[in-house]
Image 1 (tube, rainbow, N blue to C red):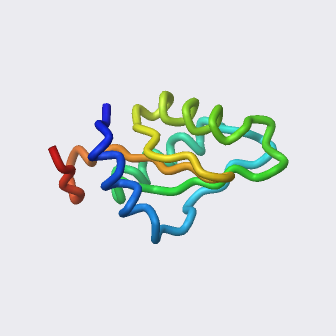
Image 2 (image 1 turned 180 degrees about the horizontal axis):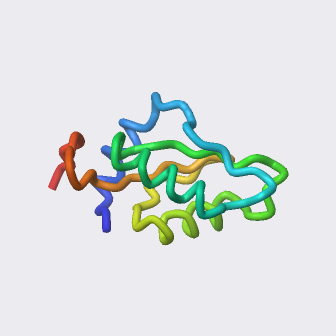
Length: 97
């Protein structure tokens, strides 16, 4: 669980990121969960876009995906959300206390 200082720090890092994945009309499928989990292991912080034709709204998609892959939702803004999960093998981001 992230505290407010850590969340603010991660939001500042995510500001310049481009969205890496898009969730469309098929919603969140197991293969997408696997790909996003692998991407989080490599990058630790990613941005995901939810397309207009998706059945889920941005908040539902973000929290559902985060729960499925054991990540934290950092920010939900517009039709995008930011996920963070510390890498087990190669941590890069040092969170403030």
